[in-house]
Length: 228
Image (cartoon, rainbow, N blue to C red; front, side, top):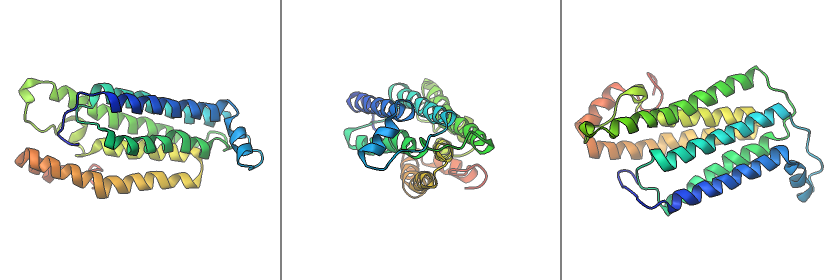
């Protein structure tokens, strides 16, 4: 829905409420014996006793994502977010909040250096994603910049630095689960950005900004600064 404005908050409110339900369900898994109940329901025996510190970290990731998504929906996102997008976004949030919880809740290994690196990666990724959007919003709110393409700040390092942020924090979350199956998520996300989202958005920016975008593309990598 690039370039389309929306005044209705229906899809945004719905997504936020369901996202909140996912987070509550994850909290039940982490701290309310939900993992035991799930194992019993599906006759899987008793789950391993997971690391409490790991559960706290994983849940903290979920809380941070909920807060950032709420900021995105009700402050940053001005383009149209319609009902047709709701299902895909909710599926992704289900994977992050509930899927990663199920994969990491029984991990008994204590927090180590790998997890500390992942935590730093999560913070950096969150900053790149939300911080870049905050910078762009400030630029767009200045009437003098009407019709101008924003290529400054964090977007001066990569044209889709916000997507790189997404890849980093999702990868970090997958790492902290210490479950090999979790790696499928960031791999799929990276493929989606590379082969679908970035080409689509690039075509939109090319149509809307013309030479401004072409000059930016000549000097700035698409996703990873100085590399790709």
